[in-house]
Length: 136
Image 1 (cartoon, rainbow, N blue to C red):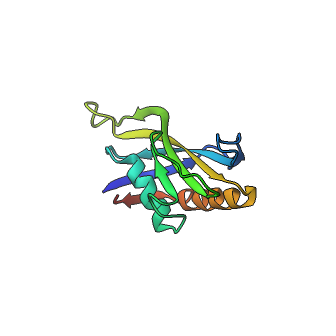
Image 2 (cartoon, rainbow, N blue to C red):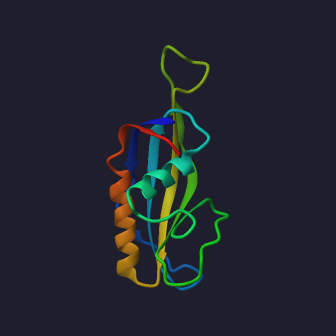
């Protein structure tokens, strides 16, 4: 279980480039402030699956090594990005109190409206996360 202080949306979902299969991509980035864990991507997947955005391994994929299926989609991919320096507290300087990982969310689909709809659903599932425990 990992406690999230918050997930911040860096920007609104935006129209990205076509992927190698000629599908539309809609993207947005998130930043998290949370307790330390080794399961950041799994936690984000859990939030999205629980919200009904998609099914892991069928329409939701994680890491840059994920093999995204051919076809119309929509397919959502979560890739960790560099994040920000962790926050420390005055009472514990040995380890950071709040790591700040980040990720890019990309949705691919042959139909722009379908990609945009799934991206908005993911955005809406992640935006309200505040003071919440996530169990991957």
